Figure 1: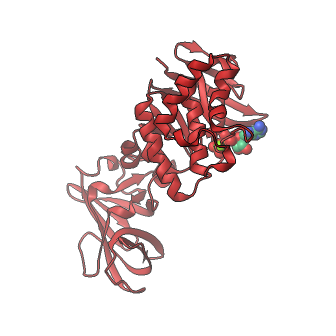
Figure 2: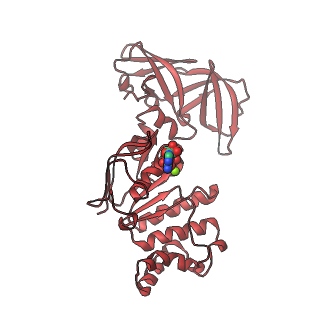
Figure 3: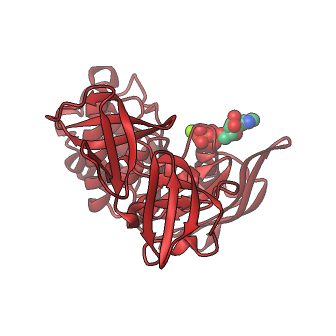
Length: 363
Ligand SMILES: Nc1ncnc2c1ncn2[C@@H]1O[C@H](COP(=O)(O)OP(=O)(O)O)[C@@H](O)[C@H]1O
Ligand SMILES: [Mg+2]
């Protein structure tokens, strides 16, 4: 069992809280992703788990053991960084063997372990090469290989794909996923890239300003963001936010927004109980909006501002009374000149509401 448990973990640099009271259980064999903007405390959290950084407060346990003061080499973890940190003067084989030789593991055991890793990662033809004779993706696979041969209890990754170009990053994402399926090990993966977080994570932890904003499966995070920050950070293009006002109307509400109003039933707007007459931040995902050129009911009226052709679809930016709304998944072949009047509708259940002051979801 290699559960990792963080209780009330804090990291202070002087008076600055880089990590503020983090509570988190990473389950055995789970692939958990920490995601958030640059500087929010992801790497610091990971480095505290690794033992590369002292913790200012709280406890960290790996398996059943509290590791607060245990040095990194005794924590049974393996770590991959953004810069692969391979030894340039050593062959791939020797790079893979290095950590094990340091631990005085017998050479034949090392060979068995490397054989296994090499098959998983497709490195067999590269064993005699030096790192400079490898592509970025191949170097990254060697770095992963060093993790695998270690047979560690926990894998820690800090932005391991950030140095790769977009195509290779997408490819390595799949390889990582395949790897985790074959080598079932608890993994904590840090990234600022929400696509990586959503595609790789069994669960995703969204961090902001040194704190955890939300923990959940990718679907939970996407469909039920608990804060405006999470709603805006996860999803691409980002969720649109509009200033709205709630008015009770029969067995439901009218949600007044720039360019019109949506009528929603009580059923599809449980979060609005008690909000009658109040201001609300309305969240609309670009992919949930339908765009019509003919008049539609329950719609916001605006004009096309810009279009971006993506081939399979187009993105359309619509101006509604001074506010801008991004609409995605518009059929690529539709011709929408700037200035064209349009009507935007959304399934009532897809609307999200946030308190304009606290920025917490109303749910
Ligand atoms: N050794 C340090 N001394 C002072 N501040 C630090 C140190 N390391 C990190 N920080 C600060 O802590 C915050 C979190 O850093 P980090 O965990 O690296 O963020 P990220 O989420 O980008 O990985 C940042 O504001 C960073 O400047
Ligand atoms: Mg970082």
